[in-house]
Length: 133
Image 1 (cartoon, one colour):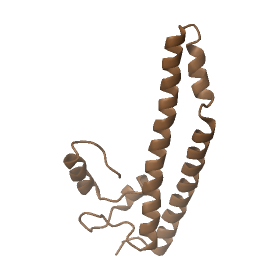
Image 2 (cartoon, one colour; image 1 turned 60 degrees about the vertical axis):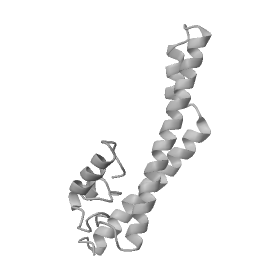
Image 3 (cartoon, rainbow, N blue to C red; image 1 turned 120 degrees about the horizontal axis):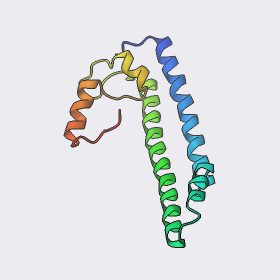
Image 4 (cartoon, rainbow, N blue to C red; image 1 turned 180 degrees about the vertical axis):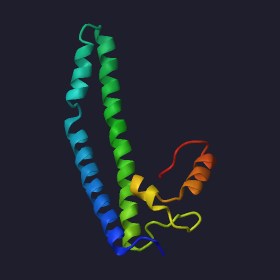
């Protein structure tokens, strides 16, 4: 059982729901726009380059946009999983050791699924690649 009070759980649920809404809006915007003002400004920097180089910049801008959508989608998955844990009352418990995740960690990363020691072990098993916090 989580060490968090009902008030704390409600506050984390609100933060997670707000982040969920923000991520959905960001993903929609990125998909709809395809190219935002920043991307256009980057492209304008390269107006003097030959067409081949300009296409490379265009490809890079598109890849950055895709990477942002992928990153936001992964975070959205983590946030939605955290909301499910709030609902089933397992929020705040490490999925590996079953111990309570410290409040400071949840404050920093509300979608955290592991305590710090278990997260470090998971990252070491994954070859140093960060996993879902």
